[in-house]
Length: 324
Ligand SMILES: Cc1cc2nc3c(=O)[nH]c(=O)nc-3n(C[C@H](O)[C@H](O)[C@H](O)COP(=O)(O)O)c2cc1C
Image 1 (cartoon, rainbow, N blue to C red):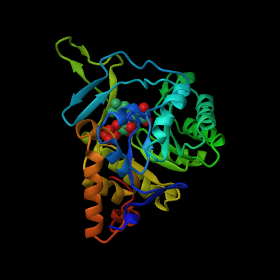
Image 2 (cartoon, rainbow, N blue to C red; image 1 turned 60 degrees about the vertical axis):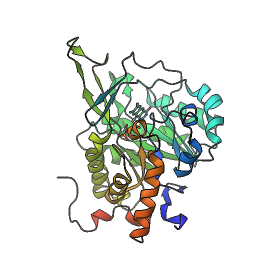
Image 3 (cartoon, rainbow, N blue to C red; image 1 turned 45 degrees about the vertical axis):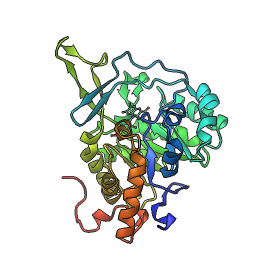
């Protein structure tokens, strides 16, 4: 197996594997270490994406926070985390031990706070390889409406982060809770993002029939897992097909959503993703990355191809612009 077959590029980051952890599902450092075979898992990864970090610590939402659905889970964690100072002090040294590029997922309540958080992280850890901006956060200055559905806000956030980030790769993580994701993609590109990642969770509700009330305190929660895979795939397809910067791979796409097998990874690559993130599948199969890497390697070898050659290949045969 040629080691280069798995290589891919996100901005100025050359990754040895297209397999990345998805934010919030892999913790930061302690959670990975708690898996007995963490060294073997780390070897399969191209980069580690941390859980969402905010400037100040956050308690998160009241319990319950997770419920299983028929083909996935609904979560309402509420970005619980220890805040940027403790993340830098406690988690970064542990994460560095894996020798992987570290991508820090960041969330904030205002445009200015996103910029301040980016500066804080990169001052404290200049070796961070990338920042992934989670725009699915409520804009507290505008009645709590998600930044992710407001193209003007997305562009401003990306610009604010980019200004503080020098050469560090900036990835903008888009929400699927929007009519046309390419509008958000174009806004992030206008703000100067180096890459896009999609999708975050889809809004969903669960009702407790015994109590006859919503299961979650916030009523709606985020759906992830196999159920969302076709949605994620469609959004990657649309962005690749309709956004020239994505199609030329000047702004590569990281595909996320329901990826559970190596075949899912191949589908996302063919739809236009340059790399993928895996979240919910981890909870079910802690060894998921090991099997995925093996299966992907075999497929590439059998088809005498590489990850780079597969990116967007399914578009070659089709004269269609997006999901109909
Ligand atoms: C428990 C949980 C926590 C999450 N926390 C974050 C987060 O902090 N920041 C973020 O951008 N996405 C977060 N996500 C979204 C995932 O990174 C991912 O986009 C989504 O789950 C879809 O991928 P999957 O189907 O492989 O899980 C979270 C998802 C789950 C299930």
